[in-house]
Length: 175
Image (cartoon, rainbow, N blue to C red; front, side):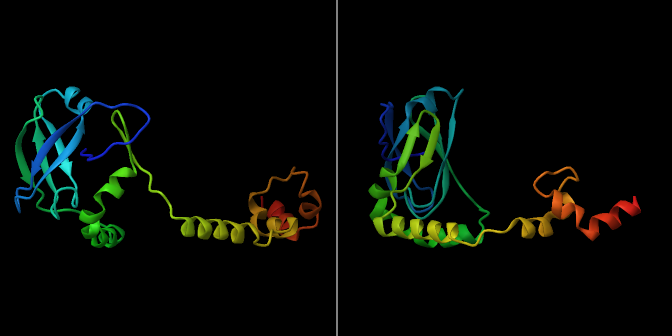
């Protein structure tokens, strides 16, 4: 877990560690919570995501003295199509590192990404919720016709519909 900036209400002790990409030799200082290293038994394996240091993904091994003891390239990475679309946008992260890490919440070993939603997007989300809530509600009869097999014979709300339903009378004869 590598985080360059941590902004939370809780004070977290961090240390800066310089990571060097084993592929392109790009360098970057990243802040690491001390608790991650202190709680490890010996070496801590950290996965450095694409876009944090450079365009490559790699692993770093950090010892108890916050010294990088080695790197490992990632030879193969499974990705789904959704991640591939996101990664095409991640190449622009170098310019937006500060914005990206302003939205990270790190407390102890808990990490969460909570992006700030622009006002236009908030309005769009609210409009979509209003549209969804304005959809036509089903009548009791429509609900019954959709789920009649799953409604119990003793259900009070559907009693009249159950008594007049020929499908139920036929199923009762079969059993």
